[in-house]
Amino acid sequence: MRDGWETVPLGQVTTQVIDPIPIAHDKTYSNLGLRMYAGGVFEREAKSGAQIKASRLFRVRSGQFIYNRLFAGGGSFGLVRPEHEHGVVSNEFPVFDLDPNRLLPEYLYLHFQQPSTWETVAEQCIGTTQTRLRWKEDRFRAYPVALPPLDEQRRIVDLIGALDDTIATLSDGIDKAGSARGFLLQGLLHRLSSDTPSLPLGELGEFTRGRRFTKADYVEEAGLGCIHYGQVHTHFGSVATETLTFIPETMKPRMRLASPGDVVVAATSENAEDLGKATVWMGNDEIAVHDDCQIFRHRLDPRFASHLFATEAFNRQKLQYAAGTKVTRISGDNLARITVPVPDSTDQQRIGQTMSDLDDTLSAMRGSRSRLRSLRSNLLTALLSGEHEIPESYDEVMEATA
Image (cartoon, rainbow, N blue to C red; front, top):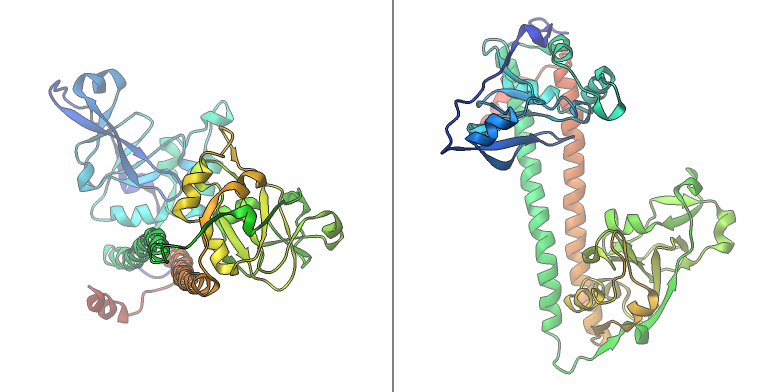
């Protein structure tokens, strides 16, 4: 650790605060909660003065540090921001003032955004049952933190904050582009000739249900590529060229396989809105498909075929065939009944390429965001260790981006 840094227990630089609210029955206060993992304060339902008195809630002030004793091992930490000045928390949320001459609130918050910190905290939680484990205040006060001088704390906070702003801007762009995706697809379809036919999917190809495999079947070395229905929901866009997972080649004879150009449709979902999400397989080899998916082998432009499962017409009709409560499903027979617009091959290629270009842009943006998040995590760990100094060029960079 470099000169000027010191490691101190948090009890030396924080003071616990218990601040009951003078009850005013004509006033209401925001009941605050804390998110897990990423952390952060959010507002829950408003509480009246009478409710606060009955519920043992306490006032918080801007700049204070709070955490949830029950979920501290899951990253439930936060700073009280100015917009939460009139908030209250329950007695499960210890509240701390920080020594302004030694510790910046934002610097402390960065320490508690690290998964390695959560793991340490989780090991220190105690309780009578697994579901009632708490990180008590004495453990918080004993927790050691590496502290640089205040000016260096500020430099670290500002640098990570600049990265956070960039990630937030990129995320906003991804959200907006994702929202525009549906409008673009509908716009392209609306421009089609008025005599463009609508046909049942069953007349355009055939649906075949995949075959069961489990995560226990996965192998690390290259084997038979496979797509699980959950991966269609969470990892793949409209086009997939590589699989995330593999199963042994010896399982191939009993699997149902998708060939290049086939569409893999997620026929199971936790909600009806996401049912039928699809990706077209454009890799070089056949792949195994999970039995909660349908394989659509068709006579359409492959990229266009994938986007049919995101059209307004498809999403409207699939709801009448969705079955189940906790988990919703749709059969191949019912998928075959849904009618979709079918332009000529030239328009299919044009629409498929336009949408794929947008998806490629979205994929590149998501990749950039992922790399920035990885950079932030690695940089934060390095800076908080006290082993690495922010170079002198930092100030010039920050001034140029301000």
